[in-house]
Length: 255
Length: 206
Image (cartoon, rainbow over all chains, first blue to last red; front, side):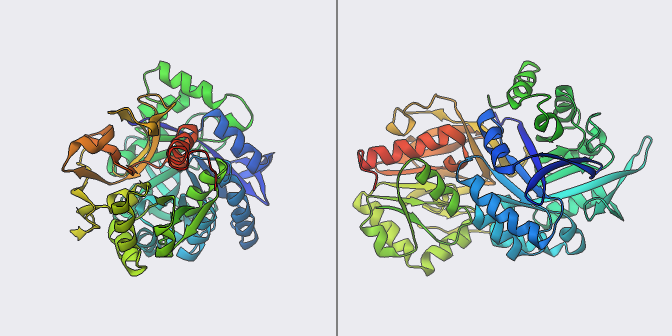
């Protein structure tokens, strides 16, 4: 049986791992290469690196970090943040990344998804969607944000998710801007709304503060994988604890 | 020489890194003559099968791969690298592959999420040195939308359940294939590379 994946997320700026709230108020969380090696040994199923500064210098630093990580970490690595072209993607893949996550560039130039899928295969194309709740109630709606959560687009997040998959996305990384860094749980309705509408795996992101939050995202949110940062970076819980908790609840995990 | 075939697939570096980590020296090459003299050949693969076949043919590698297999040189083919050894694939229409292993590559059945992405169990169907010190049912990392259906099911040394029973490890003489990515499958994945290389090279690490 396919297991559910636990994915630590390393948000990076200037070569350091940082963590904020709703993408702001960043705190230093450590050295990316050391943290990656640590999570690998702890049993993480994959790692995601996001350059949240999304600058050209940040991209060069990221290439170097991905090269060093891939020499000692033998699980899938996803790299994103500021990737604007298939050339940018190729650099990351050649450095040792297995998948690339694209966000803002995909919203403004959706054809980049199809280009990337054609060049590298859909399995390399993770479309990252940052979504903010815009209308609550029985029929909630979320809008897609770009530029690291700073710009609203008015685009419906669920509709965009479906379009991204039609264009060739192999996986979706869905982050709730509202919940990010707040440790009060994932936006389960957002995760579920998208997971039920697409045929590709969905990674839930934004808001994990307890092990039960991970469980809820997989069960109620129907996510295929859960991404978390703070609870692992600040050692609230280990990956092992998370997996043992989920296994006890009957969720298939790799231990 | 351990030849890792460079046909433009993106994950060469990961494959080479895994082999280096085990203390061997891989030679990444797109030169057909390197394959013919190699002690072992590794055929990595990600992306689309048709594009992979096209690149192998353009580089003169498909003929070298046929010769290597015919000569009995140990070869490990990974993911799309394994798929292209079959007769044909359904991916992107119908495309002819290298025709080394009788059988076809089909799309995973609808109903579950596709691609099949993540860690899934490999059930060992035979005793084989490839599985040394790897428990039956150990998890390996998969990422694919198509899977190989060999005509002769006895070559399925390992199977994995995902809507259908996938031939996740293929063994036919000195030719070995995995649908998962051992270079991305943590310690058991590294052990599988080590098992393959150890058997082939009998201790010499060159």
